Length: 116
Length: 112
Image 1 (cartoon, rainbow over the protein chains, first blue to last red):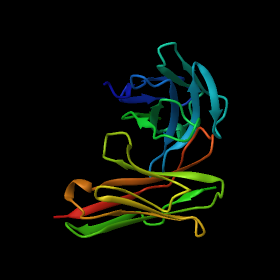
Image 2: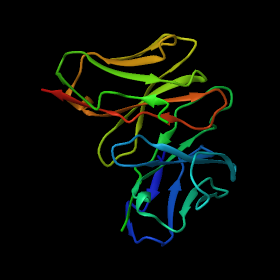
Image 3: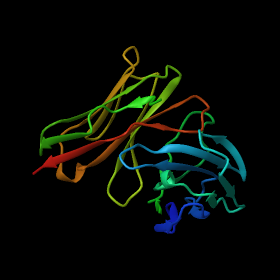
Image 4: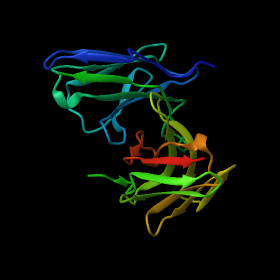
C-alpha cells in the first residue's frame, strides 16, 4: 500500500510569484485535505477536496486554490505569493472524512515553501 | 483564535516513566479528538483518537483521557521510550466536519 506522497520536497520562490504543489493520495482514499503549518504552529486547514469538488474551506484567501483529479491526486496553487506564505504545506488523505463518524487523516511528508 | 491549545511547548521525561501531554479546547461542538506524532522531515502520524461518548481510550502504551466538562484531554504514554521523542499534536473536529483543528504541539524528549 502506497502512502501519501508530495512534491516537491522544498521550494524557494520570490514574492509575487505563483506556485503549484502536488499530492498523491493513499491508495483507496478519495478525499484530500491541505494544511499550512507555519513555524512553531500547528497545521491549519486550507481546504478539502472530495470527488474532484471542493468540500470545505478554512480561513484562507482566494489566491489559495486547488484541484483534485480523477485519480484523486491533488494540487494546491498559491498566486501572488507573500512572505507569510512561507510554511510547510501538508497534504492528507482519508477514505471519506466527516461521514458516518470521523477517521484519522493520513499525512504526507509536506512541501517546505520559502518565499523571499 | 486558537480553538485547540497545548500550553506546554516541551516536556522531558526519563525512559520508563510516564509521559503526560495535555490539551485544552474551547469549542463545545468538537466531538472527536485525535493525537498525532510528528518526527522531523515527516508528516504527522496518527496515534490514537477518542470520541466524545467515551472518556478513555487505550492502545498499548498509549491512553487518551477526555474530560468534556473541563474541555480537556490528555495523552499518557507508559512506559516512555526514547523512540517516543517527537512533537505531539492534539487535534479536534466536529460531527460531519471535514477539517481538523490542531494545537501548536508539545515536543516530548525521552531521556535514556
